[in-house]
Image 1 (cartoon, each protein chain N blue to C red):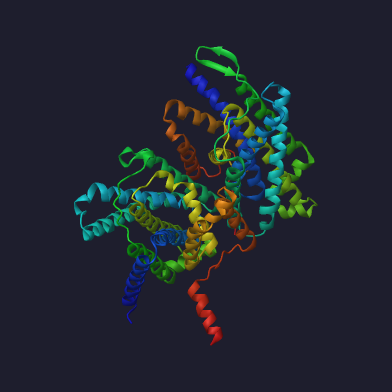
Image 2: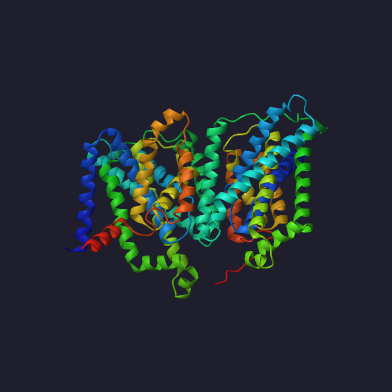
Length: 322
Length: 300
């Protein structure tokens, strides 16, 4: 089969299956599932920077915030004439998500170009700083509600669209790694100086990865805004960035499927731990998270899957059996 | 003019607190090349240790200099122990792995302390006992100098002088400088590098606890997340001065405190937290080595 056709059929099939699943599941699980998928988009996109290009960004929530606010503003202030019927709502949502992707990519370019000259801990701190600056700026824009938050965003996000974006991210990441761009990026991760000596324009590839990652985070932010109908600058603070980093680290830096699994685990785990709270009467979930992060680094620093993918591991097992 | 002098004075007092914390960042960075994200939270633990000591001793009933010193000593001891434990349990096992893993562990330790703090101490802010009532020592129009400001400034300067003496004049200090220069060479000449690294954490954490008490006295309020912002600002101060340089941390701390005080006085206080990041980004882009740091080219 033609590989592009296969690509789109996979995309549509998985998304339709997810929509069906969300209709069958009880509303509580359906909601968790959608939020988990949004988190998975964030984790997969951050994985491009933190896992595949070997940089360390701590400001992913900032790009998510840009996407959330841009898409909400575009949809509420510009595209209100499309609202009213299901088709118009979906078109308005898709258009505002595209605007969000563009603006977040722009923000990613502005942030990435100066800061990707730095490495390791400095890069982490600078991206943290940019993330916080984005949040403070939004906090001071009264047109989008400032500290009160943005209310009245149409709730038009569907599980179909969320899974569609997630699958698109995964497939594109997979193809990206296989392309010459992706190979260059992996070379930068393995040894930046060696890559540069071989003629790889390291800054170009790092900024490229950063911009793509920011755009995807923006789309995730847009989906998030149109799912909850209310957003507040405090939902995109440093803790949100850390949460996404934890997903990438636990899943294994460089493993796309690892990021998805970790995003699902970390979205469902707090809910599963709710009974614990009834026993202890205090919220121990974040304590357990942080402890898990430290223990993971001490005992299994490469994360659950390391750099391998779920499908590679399955294939390997099948080959060993046969 | 008096308004400006007052802001300068407030900024200097705040800056001396930043400088104390920045010293901890800079020492740890100098010796391990690690940004100790948990350092701000050690400040928080120090402040709480001081709070509980003061409550246990009823130090606020009869505020005396002795009471202040006891509270200070207890907090410094508690934080020093915590700093030692963090290094021993979380950082030492990762001595030979990639620095990215060390960084993530540091973020994890920081989150752990913040969230454990919220569970143990409660999430609501607590009032710091009034172990040193605020008295104006000098008053002229709008300008006033209080005993708290003098204490904050005096304590910080005293501790910095002690640190300078330890680092420059004692055998331990010489060992610290040697280890920060090269772990391998230092261990070849018989310096127990692990012990020296532990000692560095103990020293930095004790200074952080002192800063925590000073924060508690001047803004009588402590909460489990107080270390986040103050830690980031002190880190920026350390980078501003040139991370790894002790003199730089002190200068950076004062610059940071004064500029923050000016922004609050003449600008808008909503941007006060963004200021630190703006300064940080500008330095890293234009002068990454900071004011007193040495530029180290990367070697293959």
